[in-house]
Length: 219
Ligand SMILES: [Zn+2]
Image (tube, rainbow, N blue to C red; front, side):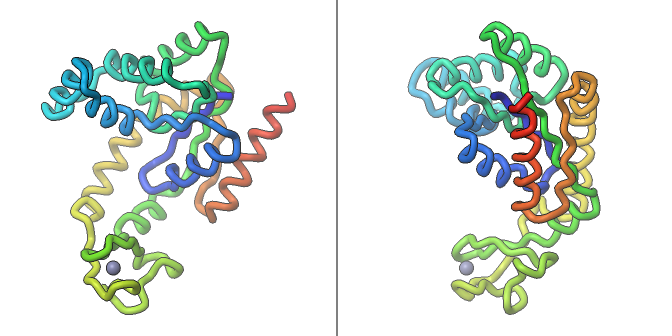
């Protein structure tokens, strides 16, 4: 079984990925993490990756596939949960070819849909403790600190990360739209896109994802 997760920033993609990974024994692949990991290798490839990441240049499609293939060769579990990948149509097409060569295919593409205003509230409400790193959210009742700007656990001062403001959010959201809308259409045409309304609790979202998977597996 192979799954792709698509979602805007702060839609809870990481949480759902973890839940899916453990329930269905999937091999969770985040390309960002893979790139960082490959840069820590002690060989020539690691050196090449370090130089590339330090240069701040955009990582090409070629390199991403090279890293992905190298990684998959070392994995026993080939049931993939792809997170942050593919990023464009070219990558999507190559991924399909890659799976086809292994007599495999994509089964589900989940799009975690959350209204823009909700995402903005989540992101601009985030606070972190300077001392212990605990996370809070002043726009979500269950995640608010008991006293304004003070950590419940260690009394440290809470702060807002630089890019958790409204302007940065607008930029990140626009980037996300530019990148993802083409993929959404692409997978919709292939009839493997499942739009999950994700403006609800993580348990409810997860149940819905599982529902789609169980139904799909019976076919
Ligand atoms: Zn603290």
